[in-house]
Amino acid sequence: MKDIFNQFLKEFGKNVKKERESKNLTLQDMDFHTGIDFSDFNKIEQGKTNITFRTLLKIAKGLKVHPKKLLDFDMDSDKN
Image (cartoon, one colour):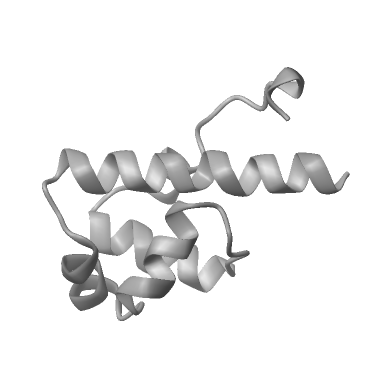
């Protein structure tokens, strides 16, 4: 179960980073737009931090996307 959870966090983080980079935003920009410290935001993108729904909404709002877009990824059991 722990492996699946860690994989979920990593895949979510990849989606966040991909979306941020597609908008040419830096970690410091996300600090400004979300109120999440850039070092904490970096940990989210690396899949090292479990976030709350409130944080998910802050990130989505900062990126100007629907939260669903950030959660749209496949959980491939072979990726552990």
